[in-house]
Length: 163
Image (cartoon, rainbow, N blue to C red; front, side, top):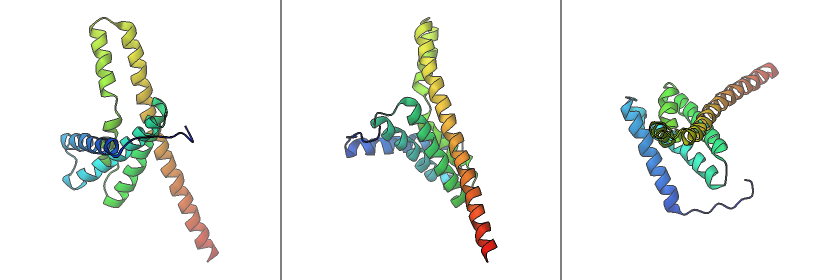
């Protein structure tokens, strides 16, 4: 993945930004996120989707792309929550929406109804991998934030002891 050339045009970036923002804001409106933070929820969703999209374009696998996208959503959500003085879930839940494998999950149900059990099983594994990757990315972002906060606390304590 490192050292690989990624080629895309500005329209690809713009389309991905606009539609990830629309998906995130649409979900935020559906679940009644306060209007003062809906725009920022959309930004959080854009950040996660763009990380996912860029890693995918750089030939990253489905698992690493979703993990890094969810990691980005987690980090941006914590930063926005501290800045806007709101719960993290106002940003992280809508921000994860572009990463959720809705179409493959629908296809699993469709194939089960049609009696195509082998194809449904294969698609179900794909959905499970993506779901676990999203959960892992969000978990890692939470662990990273906790470690960062402890590190900053230790630095402040050292500075205080030096004085």
